[in-house]
Image 1 (tube, rainbow, N blue to C red):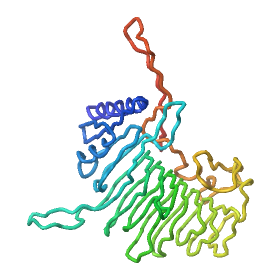
Image 2 (image 1 turned 45 degrees about the horizontal axis):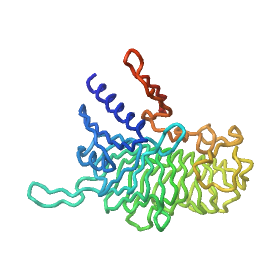
Image 3 (image 1 turned 180 degrees about the horizontal axis):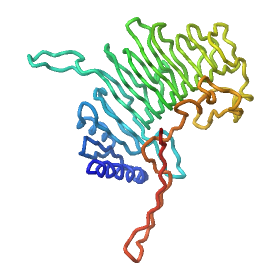
Image 4 (image 1 turned 90 degrees about the horizontal axis):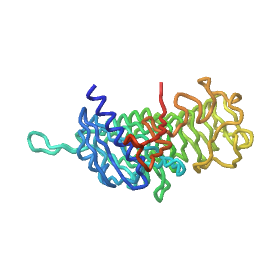
Length: 351
């Protein structure tokens, strides 16, 4: 019961921070077991990270713009207020302005010797964030068990990248995200990506992984001219080449790839016959919903509609933690001394 009370208190503090965005209150709430700590200001995330244990802690961020310098080397959960803005209802995103970098930590052993990259990056969970500038895995080690959920990646670098995988990865899940630039899997032989799974997401384009990597894309939107050496299903694409890929139950817009391997695909489709809204490209602009005009006609391998709104994780950018959609606080106190407060909260629940 004590732990539950502290968690609710932490959520209450964070929700208050969201409601106060008009006053630029920035907060990071660190939960370590039964202990809750709160940090303020644009460096609040950095302070919470510094205070966090190596693994298992949760950092919850209010809306606002936070900086993060250095490397992400601890196995933490970092959850924000989402990446969408709704000025009318006072909903604002949580923004990481400096990008993120992942790197294993060096440690000094009992003999005083430095062991390079002794503590691996393993088990990081990011959710409900707008990440400006690329996320970079900058090490020769392996990043494992990384989950990135309901995040927007924006402000590509000079190479068009928002996610630069300069290290090997194992068991990475990108779920219900928008990647407004390139995922660069790097082509060097030493880069190995196993069980890299993209689902319910928009991906601007990918720089081709090697054929020995295992990259799977499901129920997503994928732009770009080529999509090689991946297993892709139940998605919508503009690609004209899919060499080395296995493609099942996907919609190709204005393209019929000559190297198509797989079954149940729809080729040379026109935008007007696929989407509810009028469009002539798949560019993400924050307005398009990419909802199908006839979802019952385009059924995927799992029996649900093709595209973002089918599959195990239909696209929904609302974080799974409570998010204030509307709030109203009376300016006067009632006769009984109480202040009337009305708050509407939304959160996505999952089975």
